[in-house]
Image: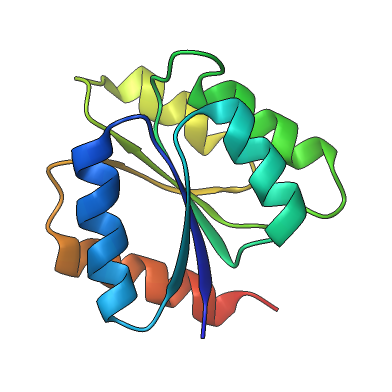
Length: 125
């Protein structure tokens, strides 16, 4: 059973994704901001993190970079999912980070997200 951490301040999106992956057999933990996400990532060492870009305290790029500074969280694959309009430059900025495996819109089909998540979890040592 895989452990997922969703770091997102949008309650509706978080709940929808949590319910979807829980139904698939994932254990899902939730953080509603970047600071809480960093604390939970260190504590539970999830198999994968779904991370929002725009959050009120610490934004997604800061979270992803701080995850890389810790031995325990450096290798956790991160899927960045944003609800805001993003341009190619933002996507490229995140993709430069070694732990960012995917960058996609919150309008993504959940079945597509599922395939990406399952592939990333399967690759994790």
